[in-house]
Length: 162
Ligand code: ZN
Image 1 (cartoon, rainbow, N blue to C red):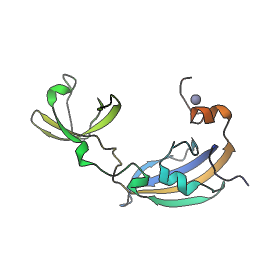
Image 2: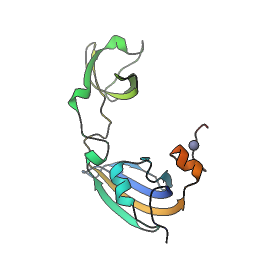
Image 3: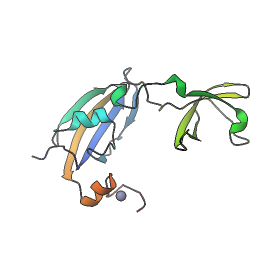
Image 4: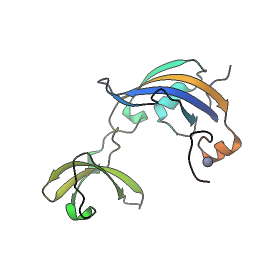
């Protein structure tokens, strides 16, 4: 029986909860396919799935270091309201794209608002969260050479430009 290894395409059903049991994400009864070994999914889950077979059920708690990282308060930054697009009704929890120090695109979340001073948080929304995954392994197949070259899955339900 085929086992999950690098350069296999793995189809899973999954549910992701935090430590309090709140559902954060799920494949919602559908199936989610990813390329194993290509960091398409968080490292801790990828490690837990290595060597599993179709039909296996995996429950794993992934610590922040192996998930979306630990929280870094240095990523909280106060910026003037004038930095935001004019006319935007800024609310706590809204997300914006910002440019990082090396010109990379960052997603920031509005953490608090004090008059014209807006505090944004550049941490991933799931940074610092222990991720509890319940996974059913549905299907495993060899990746095509093209998929390995691209670092992601091709096929039904996958949309991207070539
Ligand atoms: Zn591609």
